[in-house]
Length: 472
Image (tube, rainbow, N blue to C red):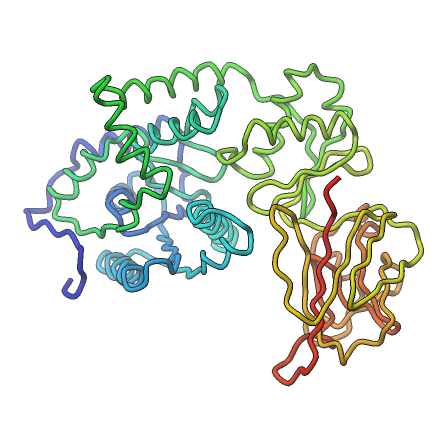
């Protein structure tokens, strides 16, 4: 395929019988029951050697596994022409084989800035959000990831460095929620040899050499240094992960009476409080895994914070990926869409806009002005912008009332109907604060802005409003 730089090509004879690597991967998939028969498998495909080998192996094994494949390439828009090259390569590679492929472009830099994350964290967050979206959209049974033996070693070291328990020492699992890892026992060297022998092209990501990323520093600096002490250190760390997995697998996942709604999961607090302190932590882990699909980026301190929240019967914790865990109505809730839930009595609170209003009864601060505000670090902020000339001051904050309406999707809608569409359960509906003027609801934070006050190209006066819960 002409025109691709940094592209690896190896011209050798093809048409060989099923090779040793293919047999190993097939056995691994069957041993760990990674794929459901007659299902659609979403394959994360970057075009690098690991994901290319994964896509090729699954392509060859698809009939034996009785699965259909859909490749998904996420363009993070971080490396300019190189990102464009990778996307074009993936499209060409898939079309050569007649494999279906979709491409999703996401602005990772924007996510990094808005959520105050490292570039590495933001890229991973974006990827996994896209994976979840396409699983739901395409009806896929799982997402196949190209993590290898060495990735497992690096992950365990990363967990040790930041402080971990037995679960962190276990590293990544072959099957974790919707994510499966068919290459987890395969060495990178074996993957390169397979691609070379079969004459399969792939691309190289130059950012894999950037030592500002922790994983790269572990790969290129720490592991070679440890290798001077023990030349077989990777094997030792991999065995450690298997041993830790055996121990943690003996700790049976507790049975939780989880109630699922369209927008959240919940469990009665008494279920946790009747358990011993040790069991309580395991139950919180199980609850979070059900809510998030994975615990890879959840720290022990976050687990402990949620346990304390349960014991106090009040409070909230925000987790990576915009997940909110909180106590309300005697239950522990987990919701992927943070909302400013507060106990609101059935009356209104006047607001100074522009200006800053502290509403101690709700534990909220509302700030408005005509200059775009900077983000508040390490704090969840709900913010919007509206055409101030379309507003009718004074402003106030109130909760839901029967008969409320808002202009949404081109027509006036009952707020109760929007609650149904957004999956807002009945218990939450009067806990959501609405920003209103004298005539209408302007803004339902985290949900909707009335289209009558939406900023247009000809808007002359823009009012920026943000809301947050002060610390303490």
